[in-house]
Length: 397
Image (cartoon, rainbow, N blue to C red):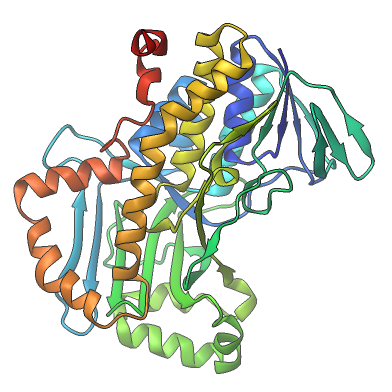
């Protein structure tokens, strides 16, 4: 098959590699002259690590990233824990890979090149005409299949997402000497739900020396200009007052432009495909990053699409239907849980944090619930590939 992929992000590169390894002719079109990642640190959960392993990108990712074994958060006024999830307790020893987007991009870009995928940079997709992609400078096609991996600003996806009340400021800084924070944990601090500070040890960035960390500060979606107007010193003082251990990280911010504002949306396409085009990653579904599943969802979409095409033996319409069926309940389940969890940690509510601290956190320390939370974070509380874990023909007969 002759396949076009719009977008050289994580999902697009993963799909390109998987489809090329299956023998298809694959061309990736990206709007930038030199494709590059956008964003800071993230966590590739065990389900995403399995996909990287299948693609051959895992060794490079592991060489740059940093294993984390625990997510821990506390309430700043009381000091009491309000979040404590371990990857390997109880259950099989597993871990998340904290990694900077630049390092993950490099690992996936390397596999794309090794697979022989053709990449055409500087080609901004503006739409499609049937099986043909439209660009600022002309058109390409027709293709047997178009994969939309252009993300939240997709010119192809019909999705209308809802803006969330809170976003986050982020930056990447050096891991400071003398900090007491562990390198193998994601640490967060909360004041009720209207303030959240986070430190994620992401390992190394290609071409840059030293061990790095991504830091986060939650902010109302429309609060960025007020944050800039309030002044950097006032913000740093507030952050350190909330969480003294945050000081050596936030002191490295010398200007407001070092902090980038990320705004989040929530939405899901009921049917992530149309005639001749299939949507993956943020083109198909979006949620807050509270459960740390964004990159994993894109990787799983890419792998599910490639497997569906393999099993359908060239029947594109059947493959797209199998892809949608395989991902439906995993995506919807995590979307629902994101909607439930996010207001407890990022929002204006006064009573939800009380419920979180007084009821939900104590419940999370009970062994059966611990196991459920571990599976939730690892990404396989629900089967990530659905019927594609086996041949879907057996389920249809």
